[in-house]
Length: 252
Image (cartoon, rainbow, N blue to C red; front, side):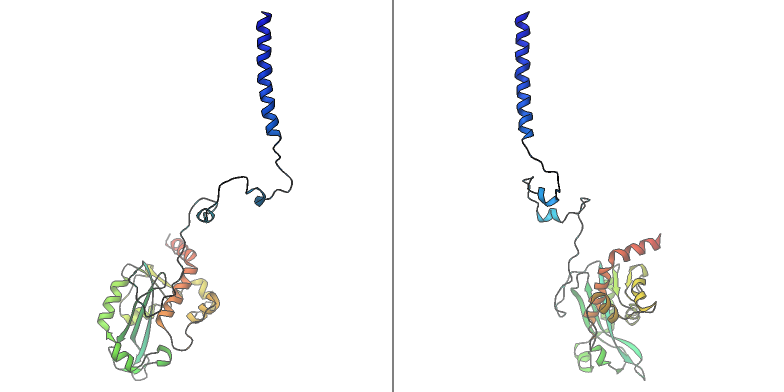
């Protein structure tokens, strides 16, 4: 019996000694607690944070990055027809005083600002005012490069069908194109309330919006319909989330 008791005591002492050694090793680790900053403990882990991981928000959800606007030259035509397109038209005048609008140029850019359509149009009525100071067009340009109105009208209608179309005071563009577009698919920077607030409820000019919101200049001298379409597009892209959210609330 005494031998059994002695063996049990020895076994307990050995196990107790091992536990003490382990505790001693752990107690030798110094963990600072005073004035600890997040950057001071980044070396605790050997894991290297990648660029992709840095861009993941704290909720773990990945966000879609919006591709920046293109720097593509206006003369280059892309075949990337996106679901959202920006449109702008240039108009010349007909009638005795040249006040009747006639379509003379149509430009369309995709959501990235790439030009997907840009054509000069042959007006269907006699032009009495080319409005060259504004349109940058004249008789020679229109007669040599112009395409029949019906051809352009059909091509543009096919391109924007079922698409979200962005523009500035775009009703006038559809008037000269002589076809309509579903209102739920129109994003008009001249009608968006936060933009109108800059003009005390009045219709703001595209030039004013670009200057005050984008800090950029458009329509300095003759207008460029590609440049104007990109200006409206950039305004939309900057406010896209809140704009689309306001539309959803209105529909509810």
